[in-house]
Length: 203
Image (cartoon, rainbow, N blue to C red; front, side, top):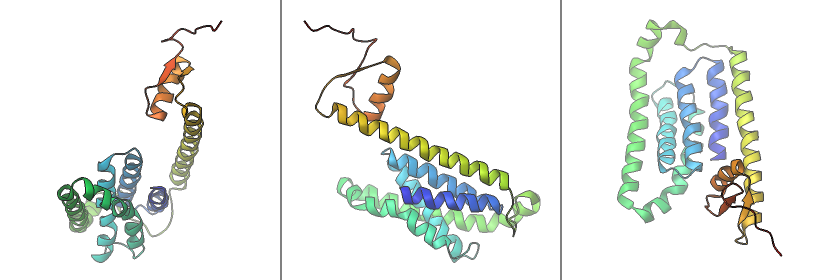
């Protein structure tokens, strides 16, 4: 998932700079899908696969550069790695998910080829350019991405520290505001807030 986010983030920055707005949308979908998959959402893996299929198909039909195939390959890896566990749970559903992902990604690429120039004629501002621009938008997007990475790193560090403290099965007493965040980070209910349980003295 980290590789998917890095590749889709780089593609997003490039697409903003060169007015490739359909690729901007695809990149955003990949990032959202990767985050959802990291949170254990099956639809995130499926949507990442469908979006990944769009990239090589767009190259195959002549509306994208060859490096789109690499983007598609990297972004299809989460689905490839999930195939065996998915199939053990439900082979039929896994086959259906693969079919829907492949066909929807290919269909969207083919459909975009048919309507792209009509949209560009009607809305010239959406037409791709051959030189980089939108420096402020690219810088702002990069800053948001770096802030999100830094924030996620702090959350993971806090979660790992909290897991060490409760790994022995202890009940941890924290403030009420911290309790909800800690319980969510640990995916556990064994977190007691000071407001809910009064402190007991040991004699």
